[in-house]
Image 1 (cartoon, rainbow, N blue to C red):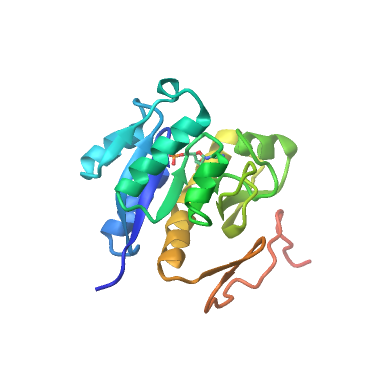
Image 2 (cartoon, rainbow, N blue to C red):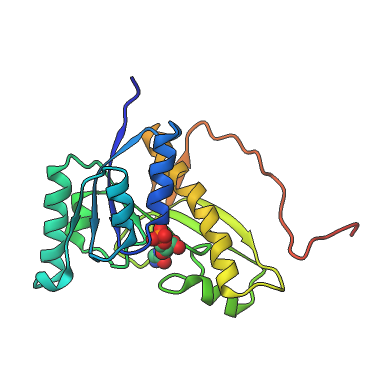
Length: 221
Ligand code: GAR
């Protein structure tokens, strides 16, 4: 039987990325099991998803903890008690403390709705839209002590069109998030990710999309 990587998922909101991970596991496309979900928000729709799929979850509210360190210590305790190997930040709106990063070295993944290092932080889709870029996208990376700065595992490029709003752009990006996050986790599960400094190499990786992209397109030019 294939080894299944044991996930701990951190959520704050809708949990559509969590749902995509669950769906990929249930379809047999992702060799993982979700051992525990932690939400800092008791109203998060992600918890409805957890209940529906019979996945254990814990709600930890910031106001019940004195400091960020105290909060993170509790998260570490809950994840360790659940045998979590890899932490997945899925729309979790909080920077991690050094003790959390030390507890899971290069074993915390985050997804960000922009082509990092462009537009880190909150409201990335709107920032990209307002800037007028022709492409944006999404990034899965290992977390480090910065805001959306860790080594990049996988990115998807998403075009912007003239008729877009920041919301239509966000929806197009989210669709790709739902594809690349399970893929990044599967690469981890297959032990194909090699981290050297800022670079993440993917073992046995075959280049299949060698063409540069243009937007607007270079037709007959
Ligand atoms: C996603 O778009 C994710 O990239 C973003 O929050 C959303 C969560 O959606 N995360 C960040 O902006 C982190 N800087 P979800 O709860 O439906 O997965």
